[in-house]
Image (cartoon, rainbow over all chains, first blue to last red; front, side, top):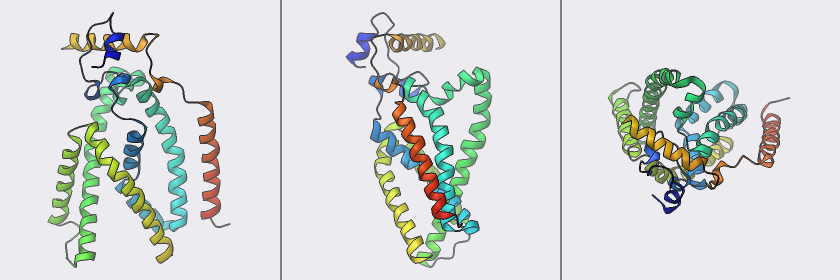
Length: 205
Length: 55
């Protein structure tokens, strides 16, 4: 705990808990992410695997240019609004988002929301992402190595489980490992996206 | 357990509500940033529609 915090809590009980791993408000001196860390994590989250898959599916129906425009415009409007409502309370007051939800839904309402969200959105959606990863691995393997793995075979399940295990290993150390990983992942995703866009428009259009 | 949490929470609130507490992140977003966001966002949307949707 820094002298800055100690000096400002002379009239209050000693502050000892790490707010980064609890739902207590985080103080300025306890923050471990700065502008670039926050930005790299958000870039890493924004350029997600499922975005490639949904964008590719959209392009099948409306063409590449319209799909890119629809994705950019839709995300620009939707993500900005969502970011403003969630990031500002968290950044300004150091509040974890589920804690901040209590101001809208109350304590019981937030618990009910979490009970629905975690099994469906978190566990369910992560299972979908893991299967997407497994199928992507199989597709790449079949194309590049000449293998013949089926889209619903054991290799897909194995790769999906490896993805879940790898994600757990990365996330188990909390914001420290997330920040470290995204320092490499975010620029790599940006480069890969630009290369893929170049390939789409120069070789396949 | 609950008492510990409440004591910790009250200590932190005392810090945050202290008039001398300095935290740049608590400043409101500058109006200039919001205006830039709206203007540049609208310009990008118009440009993307012009580029991608056939007349």
